[in-house]
Length: 559
Ligand SMILES: Nc1ncnc2c1ncn2[C@@H]1O[C@H](COP(=O)(O)OP(=O)(O)OP(=O)(O)O)[C@@H](O)[C@H]1O
Ligand SMILES: [Mg+2]
Image (cartoon, rainbow, N blue to C red; front, top):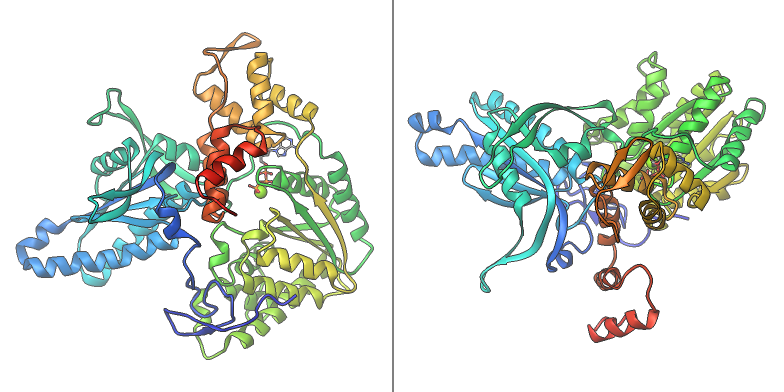
């Protein structure tokens, strides 16, 4: 199926004419459309988990002595002009400008899966940009930043005549105080933001500090740098052995074993909702296979904002292939492919079609090279976030391969309206390819129970065990996070081999670690469906359909 149909779209930034339905420009890579229903989402007042970033420019006192106020204002504006796009690139929105400071929100009005990490990436990029501005203009400006995550009330604030979308809450004040406490060049992060991003970023503890309005000293962490794992939305943790999934793992292992002798494209898809264990299954498969040296694995990962950046996935494929094949010399397919990693290469004389044809040839050549050395498994993780141009290149290149020992494997959440889903469907139907589909179901009750016991390394009180079991619904990520929350909050305390409950539990909150995953999904729904979801969540986990229908009709929800 061709997913480029109907009218062409021209880019508001560089005027390049793009294929119809494109979400981003094939030349400059900028987004062509705003995230859906941003305005509608902003119109609602609600409690939301958000990450707030305060960035304050400093160093103007010295300038004010030599320059007139208007010139200083121009410099401040020039800085903001460089800082604002960084917020937008990281899926944040500007909340307001306060003097020399800007306030940005990540997770409101629309949540994304990795908002706290996006705020950290944005903060690091802002520091770099101010460094560049200083060099370019011979200035000595500084920037200090505070980041904090928490639940706030979001919606329109202000007088009836003048309303603005904003967020209110203690978490916002804390972000401002962290920024105040940070010295020039420092990014101070609150405990919750740090906890949610520590797998992806390096932090230095800065001790506990007393802040206005807080009785107790609050732990503060300094953001230092992104780790290599930062591009993965949530690195897989290995906290327990693998429960269940024996059949799925055996099927995958069988495929890599026969690959040593068979040729022809083999397409594998691992489908499942967030947290069901797609990445973990891949890890187990690759670990057991490479130990037997049956195949070489290359894992390219799409980021949650990957579909807004043209050729993001192709660049990632090039990167992972080149890690093992560092001998890629100029002119070879792999070297050409690596150009995809550099978006400035797009702006040349070559039109989009010629560029794509070049990438198709390069990818095909590179995969032939790699598969000639050893049976190869190329994995694209999370292709529901893949950008459409990369998917087109992959489709064209892969369907041209037939004599190689190549397995192409994708993991994805079941989201049909994505370029990744369409790529998969096309490949599965392509002549000469054989395909296998693994649909991950929730863990069985006994496996989930065994996982809970293994995480606790002991016995839980039965109320806690039942609640985690019921709320996680066989999702291993939910099991891990619910258990983590209970222990971290001190609801469960260890007493020898046993765990004891420190207070009565009737229901469990949604852990902050799962807020992004769940809110991002809810925010994608059309406004009526979203409102229905809110009503349903008030009604509880199970309720008669008629009750929901009744309430919905009373509120004027017709669809
Ligand atoms: N069968 C299992 N037994 C034990 N732990 C598991 C199992 N499956 C997954 N896990 C654990 O659950 C967590 C979530 O798994 P994983 O990251 O693989 O989910 P995913 O399906 O890839 O989610 P996403 O769509 O968000 O990428 C990980 O920490 C992983 O180690
Ligand atoms: Mg995963």
